[in-house]
Image 1 (cartoon, rainbow, N blue to C red):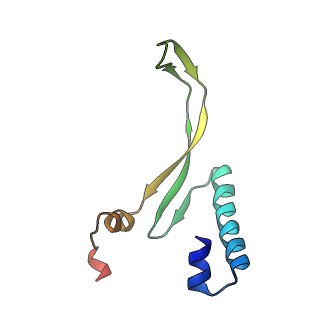
Image 2 (cartoon, rainbow, N blue to C red):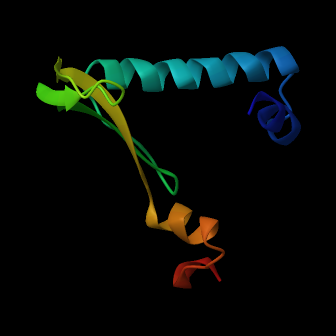
Length: 93
């Protein structure tokens, strides 16, 4: 990602690396504080709380409790889904 910023924006490699790191850190900080992060035409990152549940050790079959935790979920935008599938949206022509 740093290399792409370097080539397209014209910043130095060090400045490009710092910019990418700052953006990623902001995304991480927002998710850690419980906020959702939406990147237009890309998708949304959402932090969700998962409750305690009973799981099973696949090797032994013994039931074990799985503690509550937070997970990060990514939901791609319709534009991203279309690009991945080689489709174009009507407003992209």
